[in-house]
Image (tube, rainbow, N blue to C red; front, side):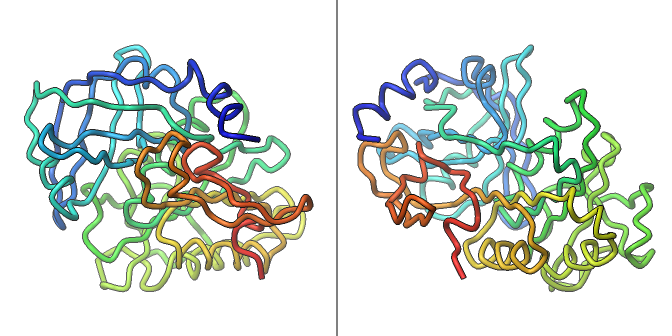
Length: 297
């Protein structure tokens, strides 16, 4: 598909919107969750899509941020970010009522298959937001999904951890730390870290995921699909895990980008499929891809 056709495909789905800050929450590790009133973006966002936000009027380059939650009725979206650099530091200093320019929603999101209702969602660091969005999407769907969310972080998690009341018989009882929001939806979540946080599995998210996968029967494994977002080394490990258990796997890639709407091709990645090798833009061709096409053996 050429650039002109790509632009036509996304016409009417990506908007430039003057958003306003509704709420700002700060967490250890210079992490922030900001809620923005952006009704057009909220109405069209899907799990895996993102926004390109102007952090401050004095900073020309925008920053891509994954959407964590939306409320279509109230017209808001939430994003999570860690302050790295001048731009996100300025965004973290925003106050309620401040105006920010947002382009979004951008990109193709996750597409779970009803043939594989046992959905395993794996998020690492600032890759957690798309997993929360996908979990909420599954929770609100009428289909009988069976999600499990695994999240990893090497800094304190960007929420106040709670002890889960949802049993996970495949795991030791002391590994009971979970995200309160997911707990309120009845979705089991478990946390992994190498930092020795109370209630967390000591190891990588893929080690924790493997424990769950090994507890399943052959027929149960046939119903599993993986979804993941996080740093590239983690995504490579998730793709390898999917190959190990012969599972379908969708990953959301994180790449630096300038325009975020397909014009500059600065976020292009190599993708291999049955049609051959091609360079795909993470912004408009992704950010979600079949893991096997991006992380080949």
